[in-house]
Image 1: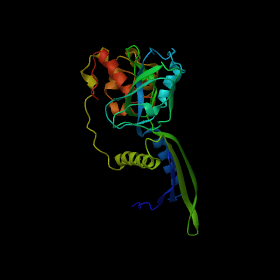
Image 2: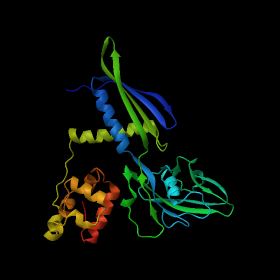
Image 3: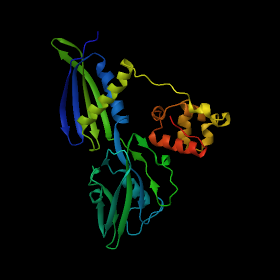
Amino acid sequence: MTQKPMFQIKKEESKGKYGRFSMEPLERGYGHTLGSALRRVLLSSLPGAAVTQVTVSGLKHQFTAIKGIKEDGADLLLNLKKLRVHYTGDKPTKITLSVRGKGEIKASKVKAPADVKIANPDLVIATLTDSKSKLDINMQVESGIGYSPAEDRRVGTIGLIPLDADFSPIERVNYKVEEARVGRFTSFDKLTVEVWTDDTLSAADALKRSAEILVVYLNQIVSPARVAKKAPASAALPSQVSNLSVEELGLPTRITNALSKSGHETVGDLLGTDKAVLAKVRNLGEKSIKIVEVALKEKGVTWEG
């Protein structure tokens, strides 16, 4: 029977958004095994929050200027993308910015509900150029995982502008493996992991959560939970609908390519796959799945997976 590993975890440095942690002694080879796995999960799988769409007074689309504001539409939206927020709610919420007069406008001026915290209040959002200048912005904040491009949130409302959303609270992760000594033996590993966050989550909590995610996946290998098999929803569909290709759904090219590369080439393929599983496919995600659902509904198909 495999013995429980006995190694120490030490917080070597923790300051602001940065944390450095070491683990030793590890059996030879486990430094890279754990380091690579933790780094991948840290960068890809931790939940966070981001501004997903905005309305700005006087701005109908990003390629226009706003009277009385130094930044053009594109620069203003770029600044809003940099806004880092802490929010763990399941439903979208609203934050606002309403200012008057000349001066530099920072994120500290944003009005937010009690469950939303602005992590970078010193971020400069815009510069108003005269005493009569005004700026009103309504922003939608959502929780999510990974990266969601603006094209995944198609909107038909004039003036409502979707933003590329980076939900990840992790900015950077490094790890290195060195020899560790136990008595006179040096055939052990020492793993050092460095984590930089956006300050919506501490580096220590980020490392802990990444390990918890790995444990959940590994437990499914050790003690597989029974997955109930169900008849594909496509079985009840007319063959002409079930055999409809994903290219005919009018999806964004990125989503169509991702579905095709993962072997989901028809409506029948989609309906036979659980949404949560499909959301894990490379270049897809929860937002992409919602877009696919909308496209299917337009064809009269309900996806219940």
